[in-house]
Length: 392
Image (cartoon, one colour):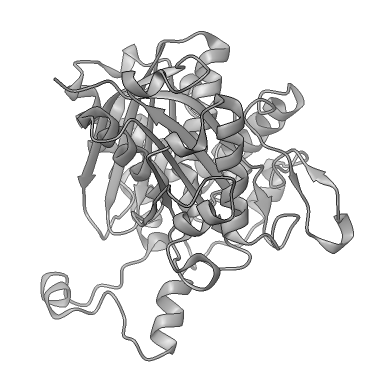
C-alpha cells in the first residue's frame, strides 16, 4: 500500500528583478538559503533528509555541475545527503516536487526536499542552448527526426503565446487587463503581509543596497496602469504579446519538505497539506503552452474531483493567454485564479517557479481555510505538470 506524501514546510526567497538586489548571489548559495530555512522550521536532524531534488532550467556556468548537490555543499546539510537536478523547463521544480512525492509514497525514502533555483541575471534564459551552440556543440531542436515530424518549424514560446491568444480570441486589451490585475493583486497581497510567512529574507549583494535585507518581491509595479501597459510595443509586429503581459525575468529560489508517515516521526512540526494528485502530460509543441489544460483535467480525474471542488488555483503566468485559455477550457472561477498575482507581477525564476507557486498556494489555502488547491505550469516542448493538494 502506498504511503501518503505530506508537505510539512515550504519557503521561498523574494523575487529579485533583473540585475536587481539578488543578481549577484551564486545559485548554490541561494539554494542553500531555502534548504537551511526548511531545516530550521521543521527541526529535523539534517542527516535524516534522504535526498534533495532541485529544478533548474539553464544548467550552465554557475548553475551547472548538479546545482542541487552544490546547494547541499553550500548549506548546513552533511555530505551524506545526496542531490540531483531536474530540467522540465518552466515546470522543473514542480517536477522535483512530483519526484519527491513519488519517492516518499513508494516508501523508498521518508524525507525529501524538493525545490529549485534560477539566477537569471547571472545565467540568462536560453544560455544553455546559446552557449552550447556558440561553443560548437550543436543545436537541440534540429534532430533529423524532429525536422521530419515538424518540417520547417521554429519552436518558440512567443509564437506559442500568440497562437494561444488567437485560438481563444484574446485581444491585446484582454491580456493587458489581466496583467494589470496581476500587479494589483500582488501589490495588495504584499501590503497586507500575505507573503511574509513564506518569504525568507535575503541579503542584497547589489552595491547600492549592500547589507540590506530584501523581504519583498521586487517586480511588482505598484503604479501600473492600463495606459502604460497598452503603450508597450508588441514582441512581433501586429502581435498581442508584450513585455508587460508576459512573465518577468527573475532571480530566486524555493524549497518544500515532503515526507511520509515514517518521515513525520523525524520532524518537529505537523503536516500542512497532503499531495493527493500528480499529473504530467505532453501536448502540442508548436502551441507549446496549452499543456496545463489536459494536465489539470487528468489530475482532477485521478481523484474524482471537479474544478468546482477546488478552492484555489495557480496557473503560471508565463504569458497572460495561458491562464486565460486554461480558465476558459476548465470553466474555472476567475476569482480563485492566481489570487495574489502571478509571474507577470511577482516574476518567473524558471527552475524555481514550481515550488515557489506551491509555497504561495499552500500559505493562501491555509489563510483562507480552504480544502483543495490545484497548480499547473506550461513548459517548453509542450509538456505540463499539474498537482492537487489537500489541506491537513
